[in-house]
Image (cartoon, rainbow, N blue to C red):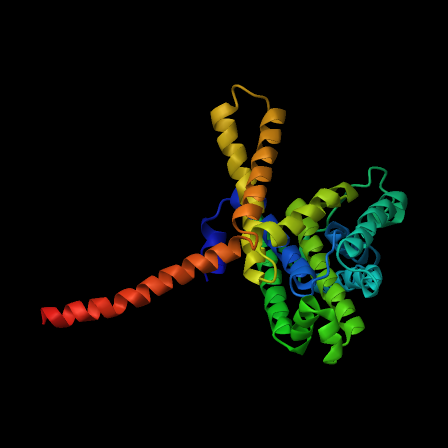
Length: 335
């Protein structure tokens, strides 16, 4: 209710465009990677590649088949990203752990090479940077910051609810069984081949849709350099270190931390040290601080912020339940 009824009307263009819209896109990408890594136990280092596939697929569908509605372009772009994800997920049938991570890393380099090498994907633009089309649904264009935010929010809410429904189904239980113990899962009849490829497909679909939001609603441009290896590690850090594995809430908390905290650091650094150091030193200082915090998370709470949140909430709830009988006894004694 707050996200739909309050934020679009009171939020500034900077808040909506530079904070909330990228937060929503990264949160959806983290949800997708959490399905694969957090719930199925398959490590992937190629998330940015599937972001790029979704963004470029939506752009080319809109360019080559202009009669298609935007929502159809969005779904088809996610489907193309899912197909590419399944293709690069085939080695998971033989590889695990670090070896699977290295295998998925090839997707990152291959996709970025293909987008740079073949000009067809960028409509033969010499720079490789192309302008994303205006978001339009049923003749209604989403042009300002509030409208793009509402569009992104709606896509993320629907995708997250559908993912939650999937994880509560038999397929979701199969994901968890494969993650916990592959041999035991196979013994009890879980189809490993279908389960792993389904996880890769669903994960890549969600990340591909997030790539469309990242390019069309946030950056409003599409370029291969925007989907580099740093972006893959950023999404991985959201779920593994900051947010928490196997938690959709953790995906949103981790994305909020990744988006908001660097902005706060840049504001504080510019205000306190802007007159002493140049922008390059301040940017490197921000990376040092964020790296130190990541190490701190690994030491203090390896399960991420969501575990800290759950533990704090559980402690408060237990304290409230413990205090309730005391209060009633005190009231009876006063009576």
